[in-house]
Image 1: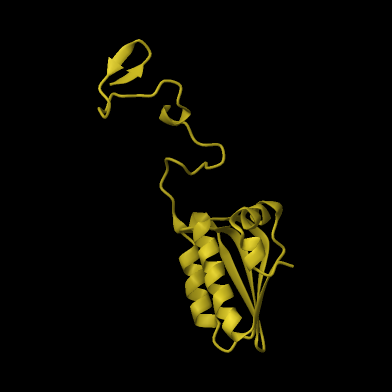
Image 2: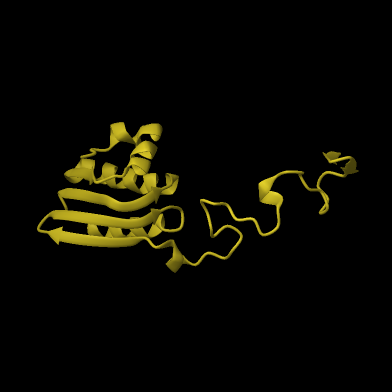
Length: 144
């Protein structure tokens, strides 16, 4: 039984509500996630990948959010672009957010470049750096 106020409602029924829970309030949107509760289109995620090739050096500038929706696009771009590259740089100056899926893609790139050359991460903002530090990626990646 789930207690809500003074009434008892069987747990798991459609009428069960948790009193005071913000997420249970109709029409409430999370302040950090205005898209919550609404359909998400890939175009709205706004991650842009800009690649600059200079001989055997490749710079990839990321803009927006690197998360579960956008990480596969970066991984596909890397798989197509890394052959023959000896120096890879990620410019994260305009990257707003990185999730574990994004970290996985960076780890893939680091492991690949360990065999073929070197990789550097540049311009990470405070939020992204905090993710790198908390996850231990600050020790794995070459951050400039």
